[in-house]
Length: 292
Ligand code: UTP
Image 1 (tube, helix red, strand yellow):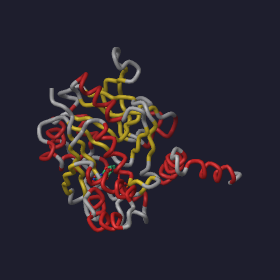
Image 2 (cartoon, helix red, strand yellow):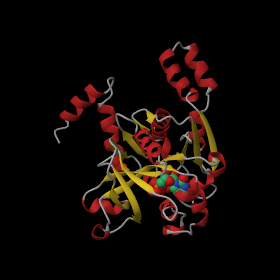
Image 3 (cartoon, protein in one colour):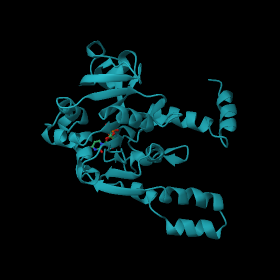
Image 4 (cartoon, protein in one colour):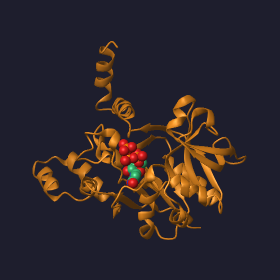
């Protein structure tokens, strides 16, 4: 059985919801407390057993490459000043992994970004992580999904229950529960609907930014016509994949933060900071003092 070793991070989007912060800086580099959001995703992928990271970048994204690269000047300076703790943090990032980069020359959609990774992924199952979905979980979300992949040998889409009108902001699964080992969390997908009106939504299972995909998705992507917004949509390709293979939705255990959205980003910042031993206590006292 082929293992899921490769994790693809599409990071070539324009990040328009976060302008002007993202005019010259990729949104993936926005810090949650003191760590860029993409590093949370990369650490999750490593913890899930992936040892090869592929980042799909575009124009103006060199900060991401610099972040995972060795910074000799910075390391030398920290060493000379005896700042060993900071040196270890900086070392840890560049030591972490081998990262490969591929360019998406034009932002033609998430599906197109995934297709750019085809040569680097080859003929094996792989993961896709959207960095702005930061997931706080006891067992890394991607690890939970790879467990499902290993049991089913099929593509797996992360899903979460979203109640009420908020469902209209998501891709939504048309799916039925599967009995057995993952009972209650596993769903067999029959279709997907992109951003439906609440009354048209086939379920309350929203698609979240984690996927485990079989390599057959690349053929499907090649056959997929441009969809909503003139972009190549990953969900359209998964719908084609469904004609040949089963696809599952998995309702992961953990809390997802949508950091691609300003309000979601602010809430995540506060929640992550409150959990930090070096910041939480002070912040809690200060927040209580705000008398909202
Ligand atoms: P989003 O829908 O969040 O778009 O993309 P965006 O451009 O990043 O941000 P907004 O909505 O304009 O603020 C979902 C994911 O797909 C990647 C993005 O980088 C993000 O991780 N993406 C999207 C690409 O890599 N290429 C594309 O052409 C489109």
